[in-house]
Length: 414
Image (cartoon, rainbow, N blue to C red; front, side, top):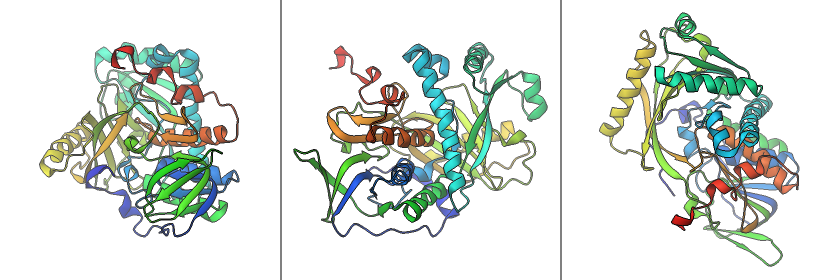
């Protein structure tokens, strides 16, 4: 099991006594078995169980114990790869389809959050996408024009308007409406709890899946380290950043590391116009948001190397850089980190998620939300995989599926 983060994390302190689920103690026969209890696994469990499928969620540790703890909770329909660049990469129709699916997924997350009996700090928001330099303005304007032409709710702000509404000025910005934010740890637990209570989702923590075999009739059997097996018609891997455990011939993602900090509560957040999510055009980029109780979360400055930084001194360099950047934008804020962490972050080679059926293993699926929009991809993936299981066509399938052309190795590398 990969160690996915280092440092002092915050989210688990907001839910000190989450529901605990027992290890698997007897054999199970189900329609669908989900491996992984993070954001993707929880939403899959909710969507599949709600649809009437007898579903089990198997988590080797504790639910939301991996990448979900380091998730900074920004939900945006725009992606690390701009729509204009994605059009060049995969064509206009597919790129716009993908972006619209991201916007729909944010709305779907809002619907799920509103159905939960507990507060997950879900809040609709807008995003301020800043030009990092004057040289980025022409491309940012093209991106705005493309988003607007395809029906997205966007504005373009000139430097004067940015300066009127924030205590800083930039060369330009796109404002996107229809985004959101949440507490990812509380959300994952609430989704699992609601799916178990209302839709019959079976949940087993501390249940390590160590093997999968398929018989001649296509029935899958998951073996566990504890002994009992799970028999399932469909198996979905939602295991975060651990693709080496999978038998399917996936193209491996690039593993990077990212840093984040969270401040103490600010005395006055009024300088932060509209509580907008903030990010920028530079790559690697900086991003920031406010929590529901007025803390600043800031992160970014990704770098190659998937292993989190274990040394405090090494993490402090990134934490200080993030704190200084917040201070530049909001001089009145107290920016000393109260929490800081460094975590694994993955990107596919085409910057799209891996969602779909294994090309060589029928009724085995993957929901791997690689990229900066992992939570949005998780929601998208849950609905897509339900469509695949139930035999419905979905226009996203060829765009994010594992057989897409952009994932095929080049002749020189084969």
